[in-house]
Image 1: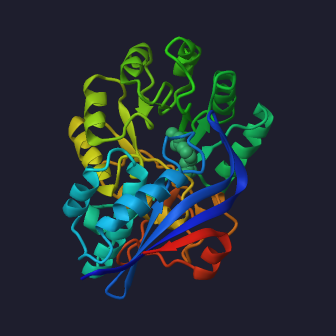
Image 2: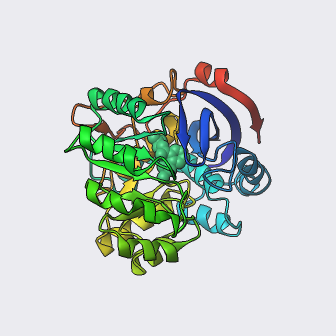
Length: 367
Ligand code: OSB
Ligand code: MG
């Protein structure tokens, strides 16, 4: 089967609520959707790089360039590659994990449709619904935060993650813990601390948190090791883990006890599964991170989180937590036990709503 056409769609979607983290505030979420057409089928992938290089060095601009000038020319007009063939071709290009992962996601969607299997099945998923939580951005004050937490708890979210940064950390986590003594709770600093300033985080050890996510710099496994040695609460790495090798080394040097897996950050679902496998073998729990995805990336996250080692709730909230209108016909909703159902239809199991897509498209490019 030949790849007939590849189309890039640059989107800008308005979030229902601004999302603020230690790195900045987002109201318009930009992303790139990749559409691969082959044998009358359409495979979709989402590039999770944002407009600004705050969470990672990749942006929609760098991903557009790498897709257009390097990755797509390897594929268009050629026969549909296997995952190994795609990864071998992509390996020559350094970095640019999110650009690579978006094309691979579209290929997984196609491979599933060709074989009549869901991506969850192809990856080795064992769960029909996955436990999920909600990631709550920084709020103007603690009273406002408590209101937002109350709203999401009332909606049925059984695990809450709070964004923190220097000056907005222990008091806000302590206030939420006081209001909800039994709520599974965790915090995410997005690299806002140094080993020195992270002394401010030591009192978090008394709040019975599930984990403390990425307190220190993304390129600093060693200082995470030093900090972990001073904390009883597990450190979980997000930004620092960009490959299976980094995941293995982080566990080996005790820089973290838990890993947040995002397929985009590690160059694709293939590497995400490898990280899952090696963490499971090492006895380290993993969970699926989120990047404010549209329905396309959300379907991929659900497929990945269906693997057996994803024992902690993912940052995979319902579609209506993010957007007034999503660009897939399927909206994902929260089940009563704070789970979301894994799609079972072939491929990612989603259909893109072309009218909704047109309404949020900034640019389109066909190959
Ligand atoms: O650090 O996990 C993060 C969103 C954008 C970039 C980085 C992160 C996040 C989130 C939101 O925490 C997760 C989600 O609900 O999609
Ligand atoms: Mg994070």
